[in-house]
Image (cartoon, rainbow, N blue to C red):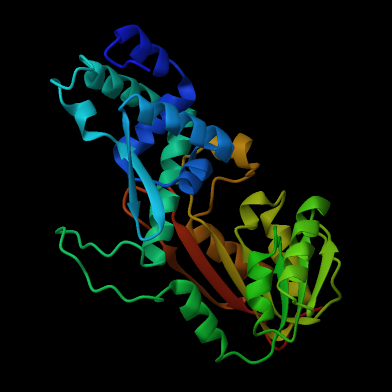
Length: 320
C-alpha cells in the first residue's frame, strides 16, 4: 500500500475499528490480546487491522520479553514524514471519539489493562521514568494464594460466581465451595475450568442472588465479587447472604464505587452504576451484619472504576 498516496492513506483510516485502534495505541503500547479485550473485536480482526496499519507506516511493532507490542509510529506525529497533515486530523478525530459512549468504553477498558499490569508488577518504571527493581515472579495473585495458607478450611459460597475464577481460587483454602450463578452457559464454563484444574471440592448450582439454593446457616464465608451491581434487588441479595451464613460467618463484597459510565448497562448488563461507601454500609447493616467495614480495594488515577471492599459478620445471636 503506497502511503505517499493521500487517497490510500485516508481509505486506510476511514475504518472506525482502525481509528479506535490507532487512538488507544496513541495512548499506550499494547499487545494483540490487550487490544482484543479493549476493542471487543476478534483477535483475527485486530491482527488484520494491525497488519494494514503497520504496512501503512502508521503503527510500529516492538518485541520485548517474548511479547509483541504495538504503538503509533513516532513518524506519524512528524509533519515532515510524507503523510501530510494526518496527525492533526487524527487528533481531532480522537478527541471526538473520546466523547462518545464507545470511546469512553475503550478508555475504561484501557485503564483496566493498565491496572492489571500494575497489579501484576509488569510495569517497573517509576513516575519519574527511572527503572525500579525487577523481581521475577512477584505478583498479587501469588500473594493472595500465600495469604490463603493462613485461613482455616472454610465452607464458602461464591454468589454470582461467573466463570468461576474466584471459585477456583477459593477452593484452594476452602473445605467446600458452592458456586451460584443464574446463567447456565456461564456455569458450564466454570465446571469445565474446574475439571481442567482438577478441582473436586466445588458444587455448581444455578440460582438467583435473591433466592439462593443454599440451606440456612450452612456456610462460613459468603463472597459477592462484582455481583451486586448485577442484582435486581441488592438489598435482598445481601439478606440472602446473611441467611445462608452460620452464626459468626463473614460476608466479603467486592464491587464498584458509584460511577457515571452508563455504557456498562447495555454492554455488560449492569443494573446499577456502582455503590457509594454509605450505600454498601447501609446494605450490610440493614441486613443484620455487624462489624461492617468498607474500604477502597483498587483505584488508579484516570480510571473511571474504583473497587470497594466491604465486609461484615453475622451475629452469634441472629433472629430467625
